[in-house]
Length: 292
Image (cartoon, rainbow, N blue to C red):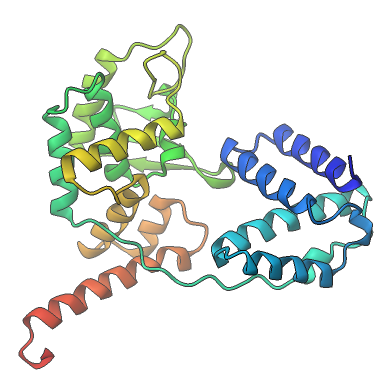
């Protein structure tokens, strides 16, 4: 095993000790193992070598977003190696991050979103856990949470009297998010039917009675989107986009939306203003006599 591979092993072990999320561990492990196929000795890797490696990734047809993620993993590894003394200098910091294209998220309308959730409520598809699935949709759209945050909820994270949930977001940051009447009604129905294994703290449980996985929840959303909305492009994050965009369209303050979404910076939240502007332009193009 090369010195670099050994350093990766130590780094991954440190991430596990820090309780990094399974998603982070999976992606970093994959990206760093691929990186180790190009290099062996970390002390001999220069900034020029890293730029050459980025060029190889470009030639392989990877998107800027994928390359940015891989470079972020490598930078973190080099920071770890510098801290433990394996390398003298973190040369990965000298490599410029490729710019990612700004993409405006595709957002279902309020009518489409509510229509889908109403269809889920009618339980037409004869799914085994319709009350659980309805609550999943109500909280995705009603709270704007990420799917990983949703399946990470425990019973103790729910304030049923105040109608708040405690969400653990990226970087283990916690925030409180309110939920509405429909979500509250769905929650009570689900709690009456929930059948966990003894001692299972998770709010959402699978047929085994254990915590529902992120992949399992993703599959549930895709299933209903495909068969009830006829739209295979909808995914859990679509409801987070819809939550933010619909709040903004109805006059919510951008900084309040930032807090609700758990964004570290306002610039991340501001992409939703672009969605609203796009919608306004579409209305203008359709309706204004001077648009044609």
